[in-house]
Length: 244
Length: 245
Image (cartoon, rainbow over all chains, first blue to last red; front, side):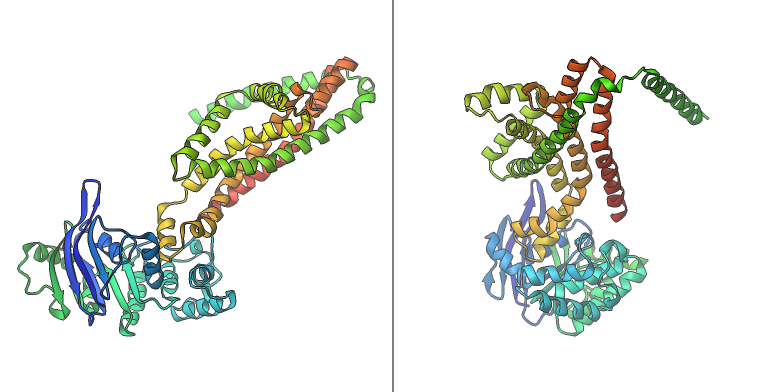
């Protein structure tokens, strides 16, 4: 993946959402998972990594190059990537198909016909061909997230950034979306993900980062999954989330 | 129990009032012959009201778009200038604006086309109110939509064009339709600068025929014939919007 964070901070007024974080994500890491308690800085860090936020201080390097702070550079970077948030990803006035087509025609310069073909095959891939003409309000939460994934994947993004993509879903829909994400992982898609799904994090993550109070508490490579961590905070957190 | 007492009271009060008004209207000894010579004037006044309102509607949308852009601008001067204009319009009576606009501004510019002066004053007035509706509509689009639009790589202007404005238009349509109904009624004040619209013609008919009822009853009905369909249409839009979300 090749990402480096150099002493990066993001403050919102008095709140230090991300506080002097330094981190190296080596090239061989394909799936990076950010975990930790709510409000610990996971989402903000993901948004900084995706170029959706400008750091208050510090620097994000992707494949050796700084993302900088210029909106136009950041927009260029965002265009190469795909995002999916917890909820309200889709534009409610456009059908599922139009939602997937919009970035293809307006950002990636596809003709309407090409965009439609590509969007349809994306929707098919995620089992949504029958819902192409439906409006977001007519789709279930799980279907909406899958349309969001189809949109994020339609231009073959370099990085796919997922911010708690299943947190707003009931268990059945959660499973349906996690399966699709797992498939993308197996296909070799580079993914950065924040999640509370520890089972999924353990199974799919190549590198796991535990964040709390805006700081990186520990980093775990591969399957070790904080089993040998010394941090009482991580132990306490894992005990709590694994208990039920 | 209290509810049914209340609704009975409402029905009683309103029902009595309606009956009383209906009795006045029906018991009057009408002399339609008296206004016979002026029917043509009334009709042409009605038509003039439609023309003034339609022209002012189109122009007011332009004015509102400009004021909305000004009020939402990232720069302070356009924001301030638009705000001052909107506050002036909302804080003074339309009648005063018409008098000032015609006798002070238009006269000093040597502009004497009452129709167009009237249209411009009305559209500035309606545009200020409409711009508040537009602004409310745009600001009602949640931050998550902006977030999604940025995430897929849309620029700010693309976000307005493809995401924010299409959604805002749906939201402001009912209120804007209501504003258009107001515009039709407000155009009645243009009689003070002698625009030969509906109200002016009714006043003249009354002055010439001394038939007050016969002059003003068609006036009320004529306005209702224009505003009722708009009001019904606006309600239907509101309902449709409610089911869409």
